[in-house]
Amino acid sequence: MPTVIRFLLSLAAFAALTGVIAGAFVAHLPDHFFGAGGRDMARQAIQMEMWHALALLAIGVIMMQVGCRWLVSLAGCTMAAGMCIFCGAVYFTAFTGVHLGAVAPTGGSLLMLSWLLLAVGIIRS
Image (cartoon, helix red, strand yellow):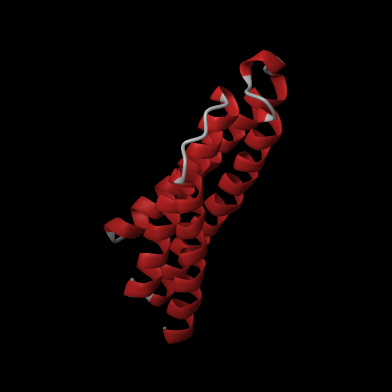
């Protein structure tokens, strides 16, 4: 199995694991562990992380079926980066109350780009 597929599938599983762990923490931690509005913000990050973990699994399966097409591979890598940047920034803000400027929007933009790359990559394959 090519390295990029192993990477995406492993990251997907790890993201799902950390999403479940974060869900348990967010459900059970007292309010003083969160910044203002942080619990709801963390729930949104968990939701984005879990959906994109499933998407990364699907991309890995697609790549096993159609081969490592460069656009699909690029979509997966862009999605992985966007998910880590976006969710990481939102988690950080949820727990500290400190906004990191344009970090979350950059991650979100990468996620949007990854979906576009995936659509074009599948159409072309």
